[in-house]
Image (cartoon, rainbow, N blue to C red; front, side, top):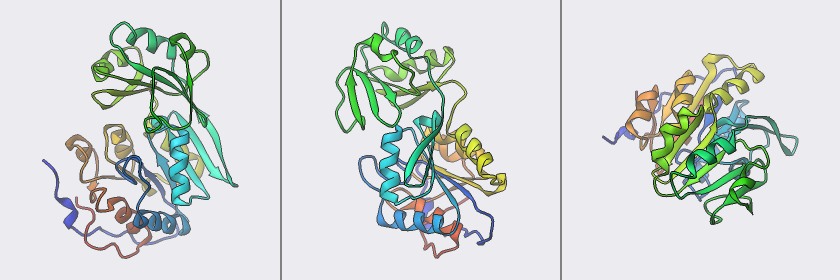
Amino acid sequence: MFLAAAVHTVKSMTPGTTPHLLAFDIDGTLAETGRPPSDTVVDAARAAVGAGHHLALATGRSLVGAISVALQLGLRRGWIASSNGAVTARIGGGKVTIVERHLVDVEAVVRYVAPKARLRIAAEIPGHGYRTAGTFGPRELPGVLQPSNLEGLWSAPTPRVALVGEGAAWLVDGLQELGVTAHALNSEWVDVTCGGVSKATAMERIRVALGVPVSATVAVGDSGNDVDMLRWAARGVAMAHAPVHVRRAANEVTGTLAEDGAAYVLRSITGRQVGTAGVTQ
């Protein structure tokens, strides 16, 4: 059942000197896919960073796709955990630097799925684009697309493989038996990364690097690939439109994307006025 939870007031956190690590999903949380974040979200994000908090974008998008949102938010410093945590990058000094990447066995994945379904397949090239077997549109994959045959997909290491086509979601269980991590965005799109990697594992490494206490961690998301991150955070917040199992993984539920629910969480960190469309327990 959809939670009409956004009629409650956010419980505002008392501003203090401890910088928080704020881990935010992008699509469905900070912005609608294919559109920039709202002015309300941008203002709230900038205020949080200006108050000394660490903003981290945690997304299933490629690094290229995540950087575009970082630019829209005006982030001059911060972190990106892209490809569902397989690529971690730092924003600072006018550039984006990859600090860690975890590679998936593309050949094993492709050899498993190829006999089972007719799929379009893309292997991510971090910070650049994708090697692709099959035709993808510019709205599906950002960056430079390099057409390839199946063997070419594993010609160089990659942190993430996208499997797109009818029946893709039915392959998730079998893929996980291979020891990889597989997330179905919908029935026709599955993202595959190496086993043991998630948004949560990336955020924990960032937290340790920054020296942020566990008690000062906040995560906000709306999808199945956010569940581990919501459980990792001291304060896990689900969007009101998230599926039931995602909301159950969180401590709180904020407003929907249309209600700028992410902005209310950001404002609660800085102690700014948050209005009446916020978080409920």
